[in-house]
Length: 139
Image 1 (cartoon, rainbow, N blue to C red):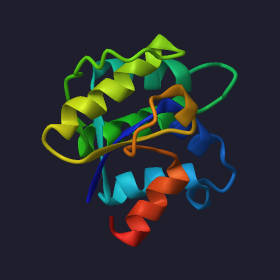
Image 2 (cartoon, rainbow, N blue to C red):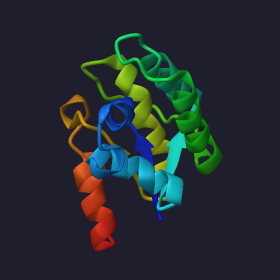
Image 3 (cartoon, one colour):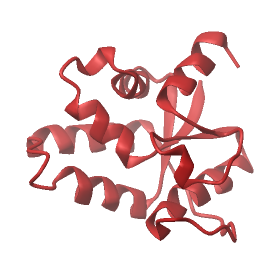
């Protein structure tokens, strides 16, 4: 079992993929549903998920968005954020990093993102593909 904060771009990529469960982001969502990955979140992250996934440009069905976020809430762990003192190109990304920091005080937790360059270089900031390798290799 692995703990991970899932960046919104991973969910967007999963939902955009024609072959949902064959793409790396889709496989991440699949691992959440099967319990291999325990998502870690807070209210700010859930709000961003809703706000971004409901953008008109994506045309995602509302019921699919709500089902995905409900799965994350049902299977996940609500966590506070721990101030990092880091600067981010997009200040809205700070919450993802800081929730990881807070949960890492209890369990080793990853930040899964398609935009690693938006975050400090840390071994726990990984791409969906890297997270899949971690799971496959049992790290």
